[in-house]
Length: 252
Image (tube, rainbow, N blue to C red):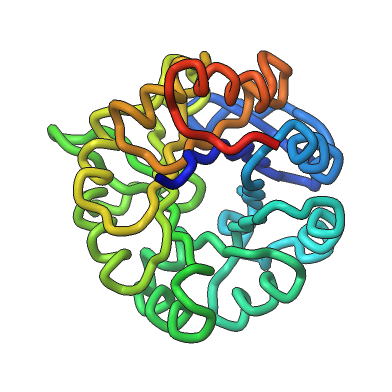
């Protein structure tokens, strides 16, 4: 049985880690390189760094920050934000990322997924899906959760996998930053059929929320931000709790 993964997420804007609620009202949470190193020491299985302003500002990912972070952490490192071409992805990987997350540009140009998977392998390609409840289902949003696309989240997830995505990063805009738990119905809708790993994102407030994401939602990994950034609890504390609940996790 594969171990369930705990993944701290660093949402970066202006060179600093920030966190908000429903993707809005952002507040400072610290230096990304220092936080990444601290989370690795706590036992994080992976680190995700999302340059959340890159797509909105129509600029490239901050490669210098990626490079500095990769020099400090040795667990798998995923980077997203501002990746518009296969060449962009190559530059992010060359800067030290193990995987690259695509969202806004992949929605506009789905062939980016196919071409990236062919160039670097599906294991390097993460498709991030930001979804919000709509008409009995979930609609996909682009540009950091600001722009509705009209796409159904489950349909888009299926297409992304068919095109070569090696992992899905599934964020519920409705639960993001609320600390009321992950969107379990949304997770079930996608995890129930997905042949690739699904990372749950948006809403962690208690260690029990992680357990529910795994046992009830079917997620392969759970990503969280504010509960780690503001020291509600540590990665190690969550893993100890999960072990007591019978969830298989990797200890540092």
